[in-house]
Image (cartoon, rainbow, N blue to C red; front, side, top):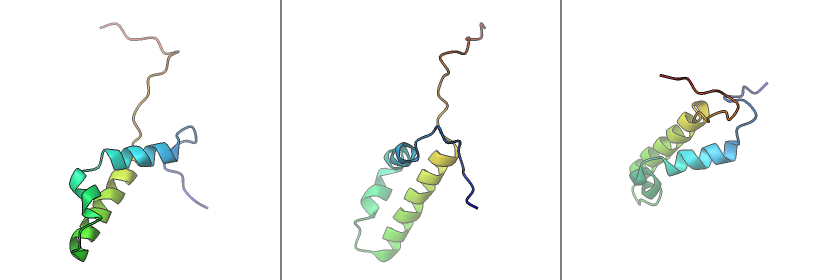
Length: 70
């Protein structure tokens, strides 16, 4: 049985896209490099960014939650 990293309300495609957009620019450009070693490093970095984003999605404020007074 597959294990889910996040609860169903999150959109995996959106989180994956956000992971790509927040990944280092060199990694996105690195996919086009002629050097196989650099392409592999770029692929690993992009995958790590996506996994990080999916396993730790941004916290969204709940409109029904009262704010704490400091």
